[in-house]
Length: 116
Image 1 (tube, rainbow, N blue to C red):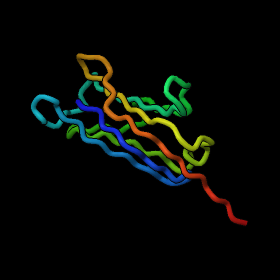
Image 2 (cartoon, rainbow, N blue to C red):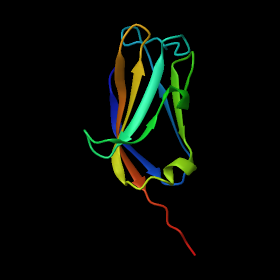
Image 3 (spheres, rainbow, N blue to C red):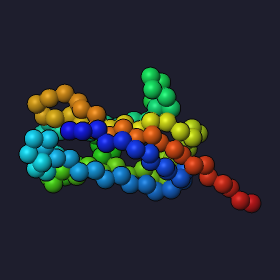
C-alpha cells in the first residue's frame, strides 16, 4: 500500500475529520477492516525522531467493512496543542503481517485568536 503524503492544516479549536480508503495493493479490492487482527494507530511528532505530542490508539479510529478508516479530531483536542507544525503518521496492522505506515502528512496547526 503506497504511503500518501501531503500537508494537513488544522485550525486549532476546530472539528476535523480525516477519512481514508484502504484497498488491497494487488487487486484494488476494498478491505474488510472489521475482521479480527486489523488495527490502526496514529500519532504526531514535532520533528522526526522526537517524542509524540499526541497519539491515537485503535479505539479512536472507525474501521469499516468497505475499507474506510476515519479519525475525528474534536476542537477540544486541537485547542490544547501548543505546537504549530509537526508530522502526522498513521499505521495499519494487517491480521497476518506487521504494521505498515500508510499516511504521512506534514501537519500545520493554526492558532486560535481570542477576542475580548
